[in-house]
Length: 218
Image (cartoon, rainbow, N blue to C red):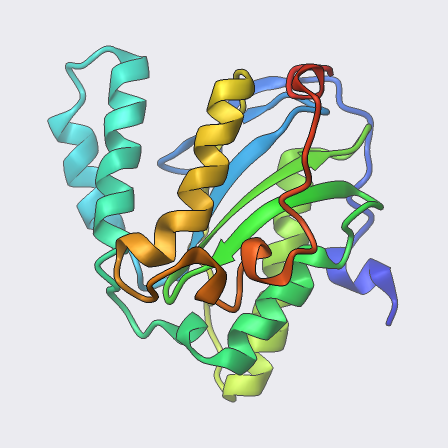
């Protein structure tokens, strides 16, 4: 398999404009070589009109508070399992997992992940000169192509935007790991984290222990 096919183009480019930006209704932070917690939804899992209504509701809040509250609302909504939930099919979840791991230790370190019925969470660390937006394009476009082909369908597979949070410190890092591990248990898909097949905790190929100073080293 040609790895350039996965990206559609080479995802590597000099990062000259690190910081906050927006590609749609969610803000993003590209900080270079820092750990990022990313949530990606299937196209029908979270209607844009729902998010727009939340943004209007929160428009008078402080920006940082509004951002966190928006994420809480999104998490609660998608955990209810709206949409066709293609990721509930083992063959589809497998293709998405393979896409997440394809450039592991080459363009990024994939630390932990979980594939839920209508969304995925993952914690990863981009390598030098690989921008978050390009890595996300790589993962989304390749997995969408493979899944659509298997499902014999056309059209948008993933939602255009995604939610990312950079890891602030070691405590935040541990909280994110716990969230990823326990997400299937929280929504009663399984009794124990290790029972959920499409997660790093099940495969034991990630959830890599790190030293505290690795969380903030850039």
